[in-house]
Image (cartoon, rainbow, N blue to C red; front, side, top):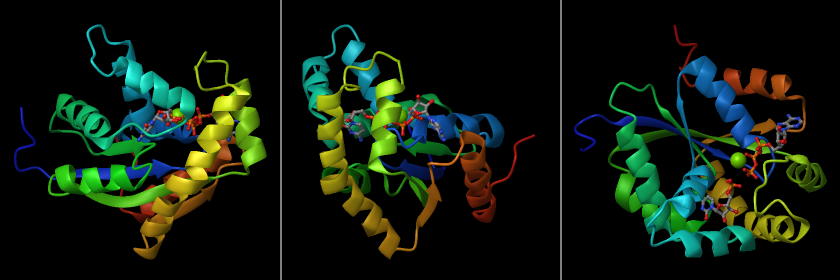
Length: 201
Ligand SMILES: Nc1ncnc2c1ncn2[C@@H]1O[C@H](COP(=O)(O)OP(=O)(O)OP(=O)(O)O)[C@@H](O)[C@H]1O
Ligand SMILES: Nc1ccn([C@@H]2O[C@H](COP(=O)(O)O)[C@@H](O)[C@H]2O)c(=O)n1
Ligand SMILES: [Mg+2]
């Protein structure tokens, strides 16, 4: 399997933990036909995969809120993109690139295979995000006070500079993630329309 000649459309989705990235991505997938690929979900699946050589390393990073080396994450993303076939409208890459290592690895491996249209940035106050993670109820091993604090430090120190990097390139579309899920989505859809992506049939 290979990417062939097709250049895939990509939108990165970033924001603090619990800002609503996954929630909005599923709405976009249903309404606009983009495929949602969450880097965190792919890492959690790899952690659970029987025979994975990376399971323990991934779990340590997840609990510590630190970032898994890009070689692992980028390969998981690339495999998921390949598995989706050639006819997809585009990919929403949720929770990536999370740090400079993610960004450098992506540029090395993927920049000639995809076009990144913009970065959807869901902003929300940290207190709101913490409460949402604590109330999420999905049994995530990092939805506890200690891991959440570490994830926030990682976000502030490593991810926010990546958002700033894309801001300098005028690629960031910031949306207030504190509003109701439907209100946020209305603005999200506007950002996609402005980039030329409309409702799928
Ligand atoms: N706009 C919203 N208003 C209220 N609650 C929300 C909103 N968006 C999402 N939530 C809830 O907040 C929690 C976190 O949402 P979600 O999983 O989408 O965030 P995330 O940004 O993907 O988080 P993480 O980075 O930790 O994966 C979920 O329980 C979700 O139902
Ligand atoms: N690019 C990424 C994305 C995620 N991780 C690790 O997974 C954890 C959970 O991510 P969510 O987006 O689902 O919140 C995150 O805290 C990291 O440990 C990563 O390493 N690299
Ligand atoms: Mg998520």
